[in-house]
Image 1 (tube, rainbow, N blue to C red):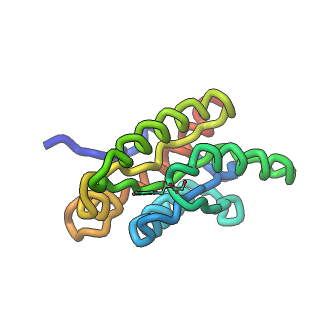
Image 2 (cartoon, rainbow, N blue to C red; image 1 turned 60 degrees about the vertical axis):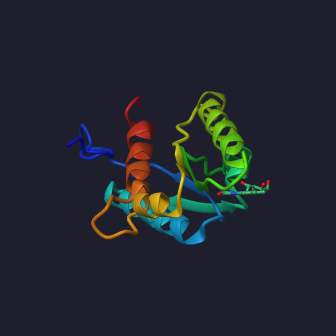
Length: 164
Ligand code: RBF
């Protein structure tokens, strides 16, 4: 069976000199909280200092791209620039086309931000057809799947250090 998720990293990464932002939406709160905790736990495991994990929120996933840009600008202005941002959102399909439009536009904008901001912007957005799919991917269903937030934390440290 294929192993889904990041699994082992290809080498040891050390996040001790990094400052990482987590920007999360507030929709689907329980799932979001689990994903944020997963991302934080992995950042700490990879030596990111607790004081260098900066958490901010936006209302919903639609706000993640613009929020990411402003978050980065604000932290830079304070003289404490971020080395990577993990935008986290949970989109769950409803009965209209809303889901498709938000998934598509948010994904495209987050991808573009990597190049515009020139720091790693991780794709921490779940795009799920059901609540159960989202809960499983946040590690909330015993024995089903792992918490994808952990992968996002690891991806942030790898991407912020690998090309130095
Ligand atoms: N935001 C999310 O992060 N996840 C969702 O599943 C979600 N579903 C929405 C469904 C509808 C019908 C609407 C109107 C908004 C939804 N939002 C969701 C909020 C959206 O991302 C944004 O915060 C608001 O539309 C305000 O710009």
